[in-house]
Image (cartoon, rainbow over all chains, first blue to last red; front, side, top):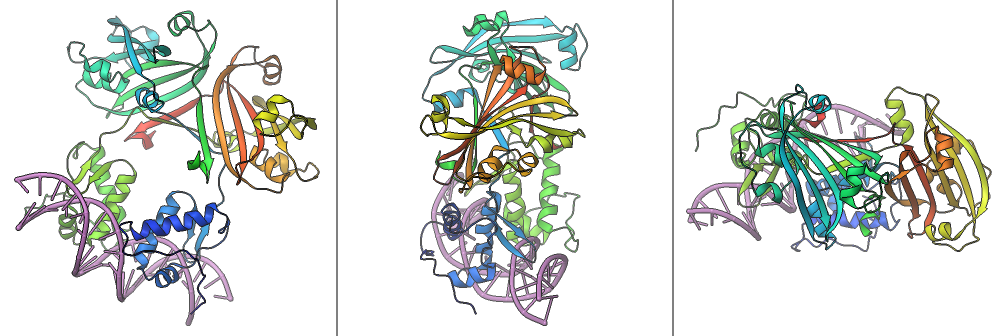
Length: 255
Length: 255
DNA sequence: AAGTGGTCTAGACCACTCC
DNA sequence: GAGTGGTCTAGACCACTTC
């Protein structure tokens, strides 16, 4: 028997809020507030179970949420310890354009500049792992927020179905959707590469920026389940309007 | 009672490999191989438990791993279903320079160009939420891989300790370490913003690239637990050598 | 009402670490 | 050997969806 810490905080077993969730938040709070510092051990699972009057499995569920969040880590046979925040790894997210724009309370729009059938040149043939001369569907479009052009996109799709260009293309003009609609296969993997570049004359004109202005260029390849490329495309983002932000650390969610 | 599917696959309860893990891999395999298609339901948890002769909690653990991995999703009162792969959200990682370079079997090196004490101008004062004239520690350095310069960095730290510049700075020249060494506080949060830009004359000279060549510019601010900025810095990456790659989809780990 | 996933319990045995 | 986290069981009750 040990003297129990007086947490001042309690668990309400009759609440609609799950016990494991209450316990996880309780520890999270103590870590954020500095009452539990990096390197310090949490009480053993058995002790937590008996002192809160809950089952050990419930304690473990709470702790496993903290482990997932990176707040603590466990050592078999030793204990559970508060982790040090890792501040120098970064994760940049670049999600669906329409979602992002809508989230910022702006109106997204897509202008389809042209759809045509083209023959693959050497570069396209290489990107799509096919032969030069192969017939491809080509799309060009401009994505805008509140009527201001932000992104200029070119996409090329290997087509195996003769399908008319439908409205659905404009509802979801993502490369994986385009590839999916015009092919018998289903996209199962996507590779994206982000470059820093400068605007070409064409890109500058469509985006309303100076030639050679800095831009992000994202290159996407969509593959089917056999790892054969189904589509390839580039998206050029205005760097004056687009930047990628990332927060790391414990209070990140407050931002 | 229902007729059980003949999976051909079995669970070995006496294996050293945990049962939940075996079951999760079994479903994962079936999803990757297309035997379980997006939208299809997994058998109910109770059925899985009885047909494999294991407890429902163990089944749930297996399923929860699949949920985490994004392979399936659950609907309360309805069932568990195979998810569609989400191919159009992207996550770019930009991890510690030394780790990344070492992983590529190259030799990372850091050249410290200069350390001095400077007075904050208006821009720095704003970035660090302090007043112009405030004395700051200033670092400039070039990071190279196999002697080729890749990144040019400037960092500014609000210092509250009079400490000599130690070797430790070169071992870990990250902004959070610099801020930590020269302050009484501990960094607890970091914000990074990635821009596309073009090289200034100074940057171009240090990186050995033409002026106005495209570069990535990453801006980092490190905060203490009270959300006061402790340090601010910029890292300029050669765009001809640096790009960010991201894979999404089910077979991503094969890459 | 029947079936589903979500939560929780009170045990059990194990492998591991540390002394 | 004592203490720790990791796995697993065989139940239970609940809220939810569907019919």
